[in-house]
Amino acid sequence: MHWYAVRAKPNHERQAELSLQQLGVETFYPRLQKQRREQRIIGALFPGYLFTRLNLAVHYRAAKYARGVLTLVAFGSIPAVVDDAIIEGLKARMRDGCVTLPAPVFSPGGLVHIRAGHLQGLEAVFEREMSDHQRVVLLLHTLTYQARVVLPIGQVANT
Image 1 (cartoon, rainbow, N blue to C red):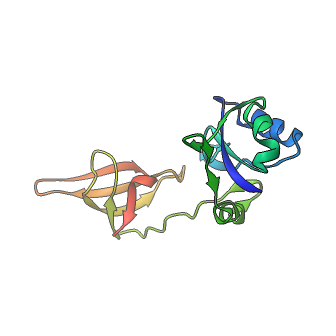
Image 2 (cartoon, one colour; image 1 turned 90 degrees about the horizontal axis):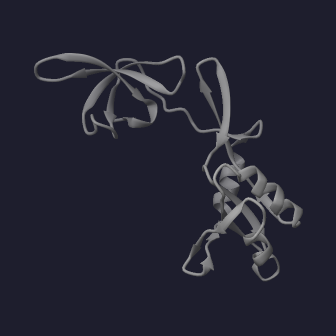
């Protein structure tokens, strides 16, 4: 038996998970907890996808046509096997039913590199993390001016 990625119908990941479990196969639907303002939101780590562990010879057809399932991810006509180490790595990061991601460590006054967005490639000075823990405030130095910019935390990396 191997792990396979399942593409669920839009917004039907949970339904696909339950349908696959009714077939008697193991499933793994990793979720991620986010903090937005004062609200805790739990969403899919990989929106539209979940994983199932099954014997293709026995469960392929039933899994492919299970309620909520769009298809099994495949290369050509052969479903792609997901390495056990990937699933175990995700499971090892589970806390309270959600996958935890390591928080980037930025120190005030430290130099950071903007790795995505309109300012990609520039360096800036880290000032602080916003209260939602999703954005950061940076001090951007150019030849003619200084500016404070607020960027999503994922667009910034330590140099």
